[in-house]
Length: 169
Picture 1 (cartoon, rainbow, N blue to C red):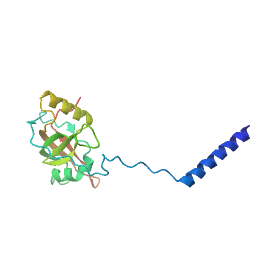
Picture 2: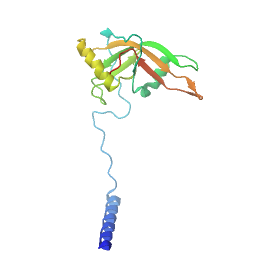
Picture 3: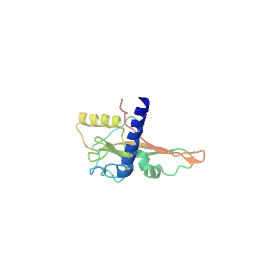
């Protein structure tokens, strides 16, 4: 009985291998047409801010996905030698309804240049506050701090953008 079972398993394995070799491996499905391949998407520049928000200079909200914009953030940090940068600039936050990768993002522009997005939790809090203040969908400004970039063990560390907005709880 065991021998017959082993022979059946071997026969099925050989048949499967034969079909794989004969038909080849399946290729992955093509990308959806509404999602651009690669890093080609860039949100539109926001208009004039409806309001300027502040959290009293605490800078507790970090911009996410800025690794894609690291070269821009490095330029915004300016010259700071081997120490950490702490460059203060103005940011404009704008709801990005056309983003093909996320359905509710809030884009962050610092000194007019795209630097990343709010985290999903912070974006939701941002949208809720916009609705409460009756400025839903309109750009909002706040202060930003570009930090990081110190030299450590012979390499320059990454930069981060922090916003003077109350973080989501």
